[in-house]
Length: 314
Length: 314
Image (tube, rainbow over the protein chains, first blue to last red):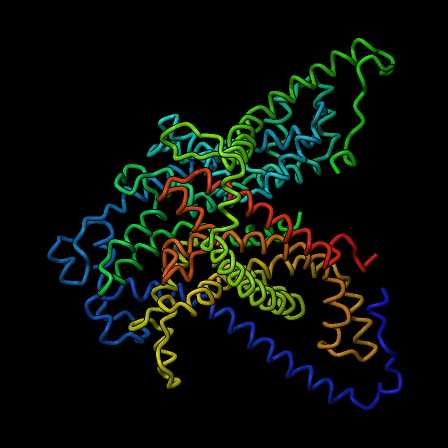
């Protein structure tokens, strides 16, 4: 409390009130200006992505600072989805190499969906066991989960890669999905916090009616926690959609059967010629990769913001 | 630490109330239910977190190329580590990145958080500022790679308007790490601000009202109220963000791949290269162990310096 004791300003109350009021107002306006500069700084790269993706790559150099797309065309998107012929692609400055973003888009959807369903469901079960059930070693196991957050992913990825290799799961969906399918420490903590707050009375009433734990979990806890579970599902979906490192490790650069979008973006970038990269195509691909996140954000932005505020420090 | 939250469990054999046999069968039922709920997560944790961690430590004492079984090598990898100039270089590069990234990001985030707190309750603004955090780091890296392009990038166009020479942001040794650090400031500033904002909300508004009655300016309230009371939250945020910052990989992997001339070869990228280009899993694991030790040391130091556990509010 000592830090905030203010020197008494009684003697100076009357004089500077008006001036100070004006100064505060100017200060507030300046602060608003700064805030809006940050908002613009945040949004500009997204606009620039869109602007570039709609440009003709051959013409980009003619007006690099134009606010609007240069020689507007959907060519970038056509190249990304393999709709352009080689001649068309090269006419607009593409590499002409065939890219199958439909395939990568599909793969990303599969990976993110499977991980989200598995991880949220199994983590919810575990969170329930931690929050509500009594069993020997519970707190020790929980502590162990906690410490796992301290180990850098790359360290765990090395032996996991070895495991996937030995099980013959490289270049398979199973290889990409398995390590994230059953739990992440974060998901378990997140839901445990909510389950701890579910009223015990409801549960006890159900128990008196003869309901067992599974029934209580599926019929009571899950429906009553629908909101936090949905939030976790959105966050998990976004995270697995964005994951780059692990899918990069377990898929071969020569094999694109199960390649996800993030990895494909890296490959696409490294394939475009160094001298004159296909920026328009690359930005079109980037926007496609970002789109699901943007859509989820538009729909659930407030929920995501609140959950991060809530969970960030616990 | 784990013991402080333990719930008293009736010991088998101890007098457990009126209906002892019934209580014991209830307890057995509890344990069986708990096992059912925890099993999938526990299995996932054991196979994909716990075992790899143990295995990783073991591998760090071996010579292992994935092709033949690991051969015990004693401390050879660690001895090699101490004499490996590239390792120290990569640590120095990582440290430069962390220092730039964290210092800029923390200051910007505090400014943003205070403005969110004192100016507006708009969750729309908070959402917009969070947007870059939700987009894949690969996407962020590519957009800025394009915007910071030497000839066509919009950043260099703006620099040209001011009348300066264009900068090779990703191409020059002394610029590449600051550039990547600032790109990730852009990605993470809204997220960090949101975490700090959550901490700010715990400060009672009455303190500001009292201070303002006493004639304190916003500026002074910030230094006398906000910052001192925010310290524990700030410590937690710093520990989280510093650990994250040390793990910089995606941005480097899709843009510079460690170049130019290893100027952006951060520790994560060096480990990745050792393991997956040179298949030296033993050595890569040893570097992973070193990384864990560094992270643990840095976190402890931060907690100490910022006295994270104590709050001035009580």
